[in-house]
Image 1 (cartoon, rainbow, N blue to C red):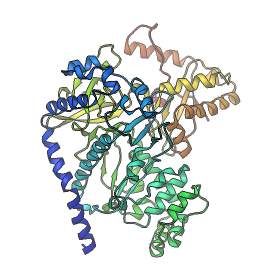
Image 2: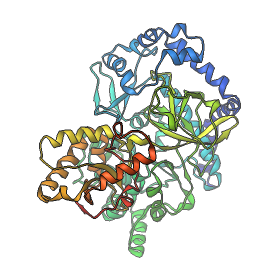
Image 3: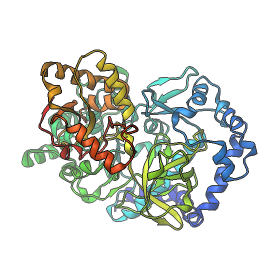
Length: 564
């Protein structure tokens, strides 16, 4: 080990000492989740009692968990949205005891509107604490790979897409945290944070690779592994341009990059002719240039989600990256970090009982008017539940629609893995398409185009080159193919208007265009009868699903042919 490397590693251990101490304390706390969670809930309620939300829900009078459940309903984002609207206008006290809102983290919602999650100092402290503890465990698991204090490739989003009437920025949380990192930490991230402000997807991937290809990268980090697949494909497709830019210290002039961002990037470009020649020879010999060719897998780690619908993308990673260890990032979203994986090689993570108060509804009771509601200490291994977090920044008994399964316990605290967005969602690449999005798009397009539709459902279809969504229609509805093609184009566009994440994934090429999957006449009526017989209930109350989240659905319905 060189002296420089030795000093960097020692510095890293010194900087992480407080986190390692904190992790030990968290592990002790996991032995008694009931006490920890109860204390946290009442601390939140006491702190937020004088907000408008707290007064409207009588926080000051709450003495027990049962009181809390009577005072505050289980509800989605729309319930708290009126209070968040006031915070957007500068009326922070409507929802928050914190005197300032750093930003609003944007996420796609279950309706046409995007969700705005207030990010406060309290939010950021909890978010960083969870990340730090996760990081310490990940580095411990990979001591022999010498990844400490070596560069990280992470794609971040735009921290400021727009501002609220009160001037509060709204954007991507990862972009914001990258922007406010301390200089020493920022040095470890190969991709400049301003890359998230580049709208053109190909240009964004290219810039990320241009700033990474000349550095000894140790980690690849992206929530969705589809991002890593696309990054690898871009590296191979653009290898000639990338190596030329690395050799000359330049950045392609034809990339769609705003002038101010290009100026920022140009000032930080470096040239490395020797490395460019090495990689060029390798590309010629192998007929390709994948991440595993640039960064040997024995010295790298991949950090991404591994649960839910990530399987098809995870299966592609070895082709491009070799087989380095893969560590799950945990259950995290714009709403916060909910789990911390403390063991590698699994999608499970222990509940972050320090940051949020958690309740759970058994999977089969989610549509019940009076479902069973359980605390973290009451869960049973092997069972599936919908998770309801209460946060210190304005979300209470929040129905985020995340379905999780208990895989075991860390001490007495449940470890859970993310299964999916429940039966109302589909999620191939992070678009989180809801049935609401589908029905709204259908209503809008049906008014413009007289496409006959006997019955329909939209479902995701996996394709290794480019996954897509299909609308399943009966064969007689496709008699006028030119009209149907027009309908498909408009429906695809309208889905993007209803769900900005769907539009972003389509624009980036991670999702292919909507297709029509044609099935036999009468197939939907037969399918509905079979489903009703399986689930029970009366035909009068039965509702045909307009969105089916199962990626395997197309293999079971009997598709006759497809139309794009």
